[in-house]
Image (cartoon, rainbow, N blue to C red; front, side):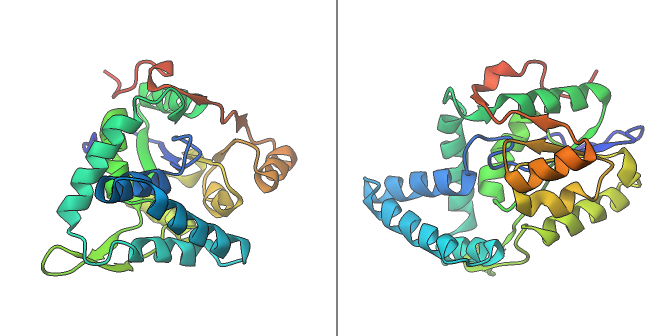
Length: 241
């Protein structure tokens, strides 16, 4: 991850991750990896995934779904999760359909312009830090699991980075960087990203969410394809020289 921020940067570009930058939901692809490494097969993962799907179909709010996910890791050492995240990402990045090509290209263009790159996601650092390092992102804003004094996750989180919480985080980050919202960009794929898209002057829709597509049509927002691609599709990722 590129931690230094350019003193001359006048814009930030915020990127949702799951189904926007990565072609899959990092939390659940990682969870499958985590469970398989411990159980040797994915039958336990299939059970957990079915439970979450049932919660979604019954109308449980995405914020609560986010909290439920992190309760699965109660008692797990944070260091073990971070190590597992690096192992998972090392394999995931090699998949030919791992990334969203159009969004990767957008990251490269923003970097060439000297923009500040921010990943903003309901996922957590175990999944996001390796990605941030790969694409030279400046900041990661995400759901932060609470860790006890022994370095183990309690199962609770400080703030699910979903919906309106994402919007507040975008606004807070722009203010902390001393930038103007109208100059900034934001990329999202789901209707729950609408709040944060409305916080910037340059919203970008990724994929075919009907709610976002209607806003894009009415407000002339650009729409990017969510077609998957390998990492190598987007060239010249990295800070501008």
